[in-house]
Length: 127
Image (cartoon, rainbow, N blue to C red; front, side, top):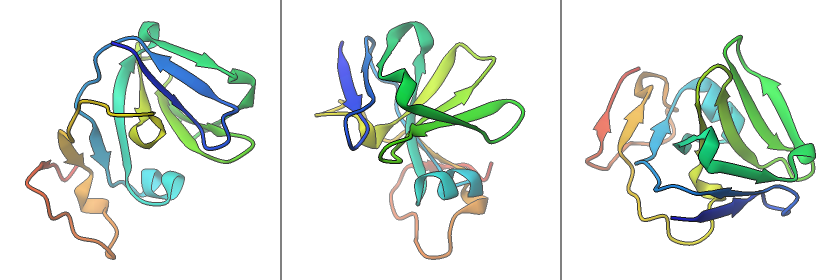
């Protein structure tokens, strides 16, 4: 399995050498502010993720345990990194081509924006 992706301008490219897990859609306030809507991502083992152009990533510490990575040139939101874990979340929208996955769950739906409805049959979690 090899999946590739990039930011909008191409300054950051990445490869995932693993099958993708079902993505989550996070509706929490931080994810919505970081991405502009809700954040859809898949967890990837650090050992399966190769990043080219790391010098173009700006990391924002959104809490003591998590940092968020985005392109310093085009602003694309790419990574959600729980610093002390062996996995990192990668934005589904940054992946090229078919992913072979389907959304697994909606999380933090208690914080979702009032301007949209969650209208699919995917499992929802308030937190």
